Amino acid sequence: PGPVLDRRLETEADLQSLRPHADAIGHMQFQLEAVRLTRARLPNDKSLIGFIGGAWTLFTYASAGDHGGHLIGAKTRQKLAHMFYERLIPLLVGNVELQLQGGAEVVMVFDTAAGELAPDLFADLALPLVRELTHIFPGKIGYYARATTQDHLRYVRSIQGLAGFGVDHRYEMARLLQNNNGTGSNSDARNSPGERGNAGFVQGNFDQALLFLNEDDFVPALERYLRPLQILSPTERAGWICGLGHGVLPRTPERNVRRFVEKVREVFA
Image (cartoon, rainbow, N blue to C red; front, side, top):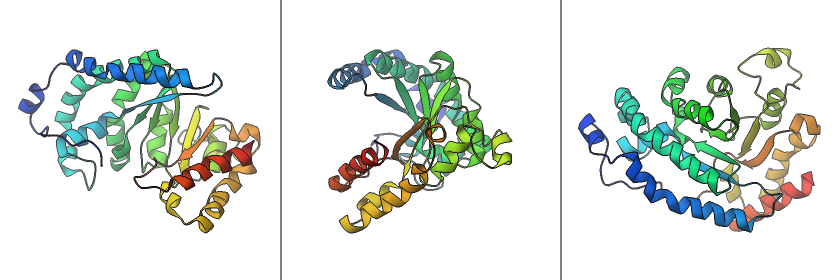
C-alpha cells in the first residue's frame, strides 16, 4: 500500500516545516547495517542491488498520499516539486552513499509514478535526481519507472554514467536487449538514439500479475515469456537482469515465486 503520511505537502509553508536532511539521514543508519548484514550472508559471486525511491514518486506521496489516479495534485504543483527536490536530493544522495558503503554494487532508483508524466515533463520532473546521482556515483545508479514508452527511455538512455535501467511488462524484452546491445536486425532501431542503448544492464520484465496463475497455467506462461530470450545469443542477451516488471505483489503465491527462480536458472544454466 505504500507509506501512510500524517500530513500533505501542498504549499511552500508545508515545505518550510520539514526538517533539514542532515537530521533525517540519521534515521537511515539502519540501512547501512542491513546492507552490510545482507552482503555478509551472500556468496562473493552474488550481486547485491540496493534501492531508493524516485524523486517524482516521493513527491506524489508527499503531496497526494499515493501515486494512483491522474496525479492532478502533483502535476499542478510543479514549482513546489522543484523546491521539494532541493531538500530531497541531498537526502537521497546520502541514502545512496550509505547503501554503497554497506556493500551494494548498484542502487536502483524506483520511480514507479514517473511513467505517468509526458516525456518532456518526465525529463524535467523525474530525471534531475538521476542525473545528480550518476554525476556523483557514475556506474553505480540504475533507474526504473513503470509504464514508460520509448520516448521516456530516450531520455533515460541519454544520462551519462547510468549503470542501466528497468522496464515493466509492456516491453518485448528480447527486442529491447538486441537494441540495447546494438545487435537488432532493424536498422532504424539500431541507428535511432531512442532505441539504441548505452550497453548498460536492462532489468525486467515478467508480468508480476501472472504469478497468481494456478499451478497448471503458470509454468507454460513463464516458458512463453522466456522462449524469445532463449534463442538470443549470449552477446544479444548480455546485460539482462531477469526479474519482474515491477515487484512481487501482496499475497502472491510463494510457490510461483520459487518456480520462477528455479525455471529461469534451469533454462539459462
